[in-house]
Image (cartoon, rainbow, N blue to C red; front, side, top):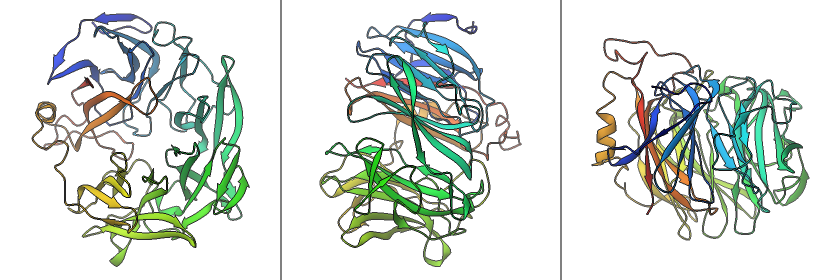
Amino acid sequence: MPATLSQITAAAPTRTAGGLQVDMVWSGVGTGIGAATARDGTHLFAYYDADRYLTLAAIDPAGRITRRRLASRFAGWDAHNAITMAIGPDDSLHIAGNMHASPMVYAHGPHAPDIASVRLSPMTGQNEASATYPHFLHDAKGNLLFMYRDGGSGNGTWLLNRWEGGAWTRVGSLFADHDDAGPISAYPTEFVRGPDGRFHVAVVWRRTPDVATNFALSYASTADFRSWQAGGRSITGPLSPETMATVDAPGENAGLVNNAALGLDGAGRPIILYTRYGEGGHNAIFAATPGANGWTTRAIATAPGRAQIAGRGSIPDLPVAVFAGPPRGSRLPVHIALPHGGDLHDRVLDTDRLALIAADAPHPHADDPVADALKAQTNGMADVALHDMPVPAATPGEVAGRLRWFAQKANGDRPRACTDDAPRACAPPPSPLLWFPDH
């Protein structure tokens, strides 16, 4: 019997497809899942269960599973509604998600791994009526920070909070919500901490809710999220296109996508991957790195055709480039996918030459019995993707294991219709959420 709200349920471990099944999860559209590991080795997860309730699960070191639903239910089709989870330096547990320009959904408990004590509540109680993109991170001193966008696409302010003394306090605004030309929105990468303790970030800037109005890519770094460095200059926040270092400024309608990725090579040098229209107007992946005279950018892969970058909502089958592992000197593993049959899968980027130098590595799901077992359950669905997510260990920078599940891809944040080709797309079967611990 499914859990009722706030009820704690316990279950014996179940093995499916070689993994420990955490629960059955909603597969109508893929969203991020929250994960953390407590100091006692308990693994914690936050996800939408088969009935779309925001649900917490804890797997203790003996493999016993407890679950608890919270009083927040996902509408089911908006790929923006990712969930994030973190543990504070005082062992407090924090969860946020199920929001897209909507009231903030936040919950916390005083001690991880106790999910029974977790309660939904406001965070600071201010600027929480129209929240999107929740994200926890730890600063160089180990303090827990939380960032999110207040407002809508093309007209939103990014705010930063800090957890201290058992409560959240407002640090300030991270990114500007307007420039000389009018309202803007920032789409930042993950903050990446370098060997010197500084955090690096790149930002794609947009004018309106239409992705076609992305117009520039910029960069800055910080040690404390108060003072910043950009292009050799000291600047103060909130960051804007004018104050940050310009990486590329192709203007609107140039195919710039707000899914840039930032990584560091072995020397701690920032490398940015991003996509816009390139040669012949085709979608292309670019790499960028700073030099003595500004940023050097170079196209490293070009699609055989063009997918138009325009519209609102979550757009499926966009060109994508992400970092796929730690650096080895000037070589960084990357995963690149391009539309129109231009998928390059896994490669290695030479960060000195900004060039792909390795042949295709085997796709992570090739000849994979777990992937095969998951795919066998997706008949009748539409545009299914297999998700493979690392779970952080209690020790910063280490990985405790991986989660795997399936879900349909984004569909412009709209419900899918059932068709003759995909008779289960509108009411898809739930996916097993599988946990594979590292040993």
